[in-house]
Length: 334
Length: 277
Ligand SMILES: Nc1ncnc2c1ncn2[C@@H]1O[C@H](COP(=O)(O)OP(=O)(O)O)[C@@H](O)[C@H]1O
Ligand SMILES: [Mg+2]
Picture 1 (cartoon, each protein chain N blue to C red):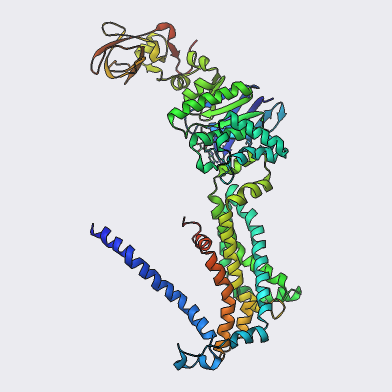
Picture 2: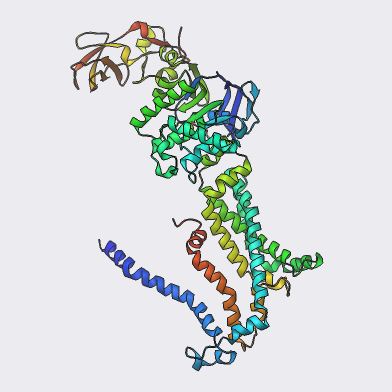
């Protein structure tokens, strides 16, 4: 249904090459997430797949057929935009029905599908309203409704939740994941938020400056980041990465250990430091440690509570079996 | 504090007064025109009848009976309407292409279009007369429509371009993803969304066509002659027929003033390129 393959795809705007040669395959039914810092080319890559940007070179295949020159309207993909991009002059019902009307489906069939989508998305009471009268979350649902009614080969999402407030974002995240489970259609989802990537993806594609840094399942990336960039980008709070003598002792240029993979004691341990800020969340405690002589700040995460406050001495011991070692080229050492 | 206080006082009393003064100054010629149109030609030049005189409808009756006002008026309507329709038919696709698929040359093309308005019309008077006469188009509706359309096209494209620019590109792209072709984008999305702007543009274009005098006077004689030509025909250098001339002028500008009155909002929006919300 929706296998998407990119071969040697590049994209330049004028002289600036935003996407260097890139190969990528997204399997049918997969939930793929493109994640990376802002400006790294995620949207551009998604728009290349959508057909909204022309490739500078390379090939894009959808379901085994070369779609490189096919216009967006003929690719059979649906897209949900960050701005929702609803048609402001149409009611919710007309918005959702629009792609079906364009496909010349008969009215009875259209009505049935629109009602069905509205039910799934809790929009039944809003069908006759205009987008301007809806809240952000409802607009988002309309945009999703407009995408699902056409039963596309794949869904493309460009940071669909970034305009929503935090609480709503978590809810919508779940809804989209459930939608994927129900429809089992390929979804490509762009975000700069690694939490969204980790929670939703079957496959994460980490991008930096248009380059694919790593492709893998969320846990692959968490346990075996391919390089320093991925190590620092995936996981929250961020992995501690230190250079210098401590790393050299282990034969590496830099070593990384996650906040949750560090043992903490107030009496003894490998490295001594001083507590800066301690964040007590009840379930966990995040401690930001200074003056270790390793890095400006080391963050550790302890399950449950620990009685430390600002200025206390603290001892840290990384769990050696979960330590990551990186070479001079930034790549993971075996 | 003092500045705030004075500016508040000014905005309460000063601004409306100022607006009225300016309004009256602009309105005065029209008022005078209408007033004069009810005087006889003889009364019109006599100072003692400046304000108080015996009004007469003769000028108007005379005009419709002897000067064939309705034929000129019909020509004005036909040429202005068709020129506006054609200008939009060409201008909408043009502005659409430039607003949503700009190239590096788009800015230059827009400037070039505007620059054609800087050409003095008199500079092309001879070629235009020669061309229309040798093509057998002199004094035809077709020619007047084409000329009116062409001279207004730059401003039409500019206005539409600015309106289209305000439509988020995402919405057009959403349309493409939803399977519409180019014509569908224009019909289903662009025109409904830019409806206000298109109406303002059409209105302004229509008014410019209606008021155009340089070419309509010079390239027509009777068949395709518009109201501008009628006014021109009643102009006498000695100023002996002021009453008659005023009636003709009032009857020529009347329809456009009425139209303008009903479409004030659109017009203001059009003239300020949508800057007034
Ligand atoms: N239409 C365009 N013209 C020129 N440069 C562009 C265009 N679109 C994107 N870019 C550039 O390409 C880079 C990647 O942009 P984008 O794909 O939007 O990043 P992301 O979505 O990851 O934040 C940025 O440096 C941006 O400035
Ligand atoms: Mg983006």
